[in-house]
Length: 467
Image 1: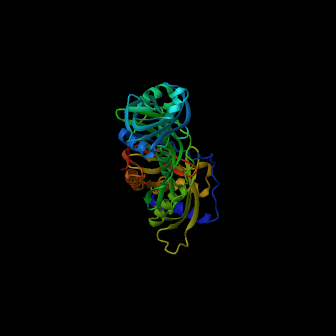
Image 2: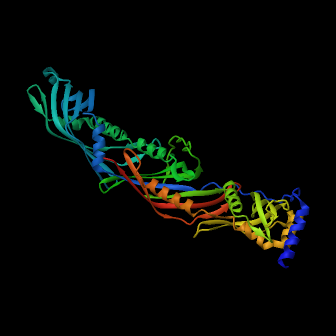
Image 3: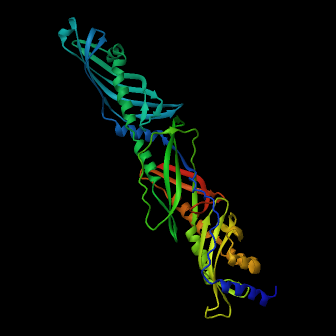
């Protein structure tokens, strides 16, 4: 069709239609719900040197490690009653080897023994000795996030003198006769000191920190918000001079666009679940959503800035909406068509058209688009039939060029912000920093809310106690 004829065929029917013709709404199947983000994981393996364990035990230990009153025991003089006081004389020495935490604790022992029989006439026996408690135990971390131990071992005594009137004997004989009843208070005290090593506050701080929103965008202001769901634990491993603790936090993340930091208060620390494998790795799933309202704004802005020309007519678009459907999306447009020579707009007419297309995403260029744009035949009205007959390809191409959304800059900014924020050490006593090594190729879909690209960040975690 020659150009003048094509113009007249396009112009006069549209002019006769006026602006009161509405296209029937096309059939839409229910769009997909926005899927729940996949779990993000942060695995941390912390090695606590035996020297630090010794510092923690010594900081929690009291000088008095045992105090018994009127304890009935067997002694070389028959049945006796014993008062015992054990006071430590130096710091505990700790070693961590072969699955056992070994403790050596020096102490000073004082005893008072009241005997029956003929020696009772000499009064109570007085004794003292230098002692060394040598014990070992495995360690476990309970559902209450407290360390539990079961120390057992031996007591070594030296310079052990027991005086009863004119007689002098060895405190070790009284100790040996007393058996476990004299050793248990020392083991119980050390177990109590180990249980007072504060693991839970460090874990609570790690758990609470995961809820803090991470700023990842400036224009618009956006936040990565993680919602932790569980915390897995591997029981402590002891060896090579250290205690090894391994944890893994699982969370689901979303990106929120708002000026103020989102409210995301931490939930109470949950009971631990079993962790199968220890590591210092993380993987964070990051959803990037282009809402339909933003896509509509961008497309309409492009059409308004540079109005398309079809068959000698200038198309002035007044609205553009994206209607999601399960298998595709529908683009609803309203525009005013006028001849290029009509500067007054008196000779124009309105059109209302529905188009259909398939959303797509190019991972290499990070461009979202609605491809394969075509007329929705089921909703065809007179205006659409005129467009199809006269300027089918040109009209869909003009619309299709505006339904291309380059989100590479936004995603790149998010990646940079995520990399920088995760690399910053966090924590007062326990310092944790995550270093991104790679970003995965985004997976793309569309939902009832917008176009969704889901990408991931993975890397290593550095964790250490601060001095």
